Amino acid sequence: MTLPYDLNADAFAAVTSSGAVTVRPLVTGDRAEWARLWEAYLVFYRTTQPESQYALNWARLFDPAEPVFGFIAEVGGKAVGLVHILFHRSFWLEGPSCYLQDLYADPEVRGTGVGRALIEHVYGVAKAAGSARVHWLTEYGNATARMLYDRIAEESGFLQYVKRL
Image 1: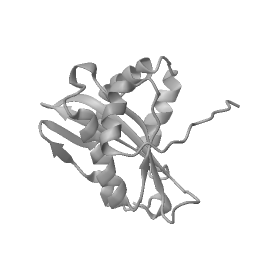
Image 2: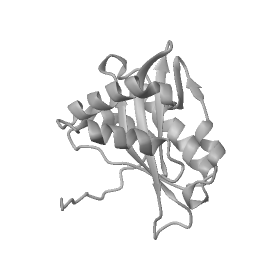
Image 3: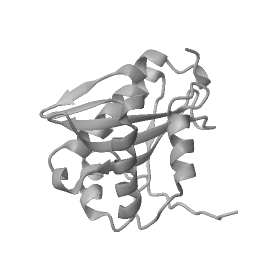
Image 4: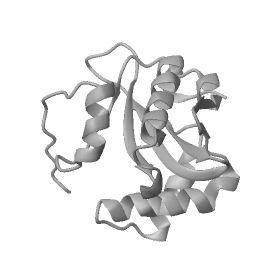
C-alpha cells in the first residue's frame, strides 16, 4: 500500500500494551464502538455531527489516499478509548508532522493510563511512519487532560485562531 508523504505503512499496524491497556488500529468491525466513542468525544466538547460526517470519517480512516488513521484502546477486550491522527506537511520540518486530532477515554477509565497509552502509541506510530513531531490542541479548561499532557509533552505557548468559512 502506498501512502501519502512516503509514510511507512507498516507503522500503522502496530499494537501496543501498557499495563491492562491494549491499543490497536481500528478495523472495519469496530464501526459501532468507534461511533459510540466518537459521539461521546463530541458530547464532551458540546457539539454534534450529522451521520453523514460519521460515514465520511469512517471511509477516510480506511482510504489509503487519506493520511488519517485511528486507533482504539481496550481494557479486558472492551473498547474504552479512541484517538485519530492525521499527517501533513510543514514548512518547519523535512518530513510530515503528525496531528493528534481527537483523543477520548470513557469517563470510568480516566486517570487509569488509557489516555497516556493512546498518546504513547501515537508517538511510536508517528516516529515509525517517518514523522519527527506530534502536536495537538486542547481546551484551556480541560485541566484533567492538561495534567497528563504537561507530563508527556511541551506546551508550545501558541494560541489557535479560527475563522469559519
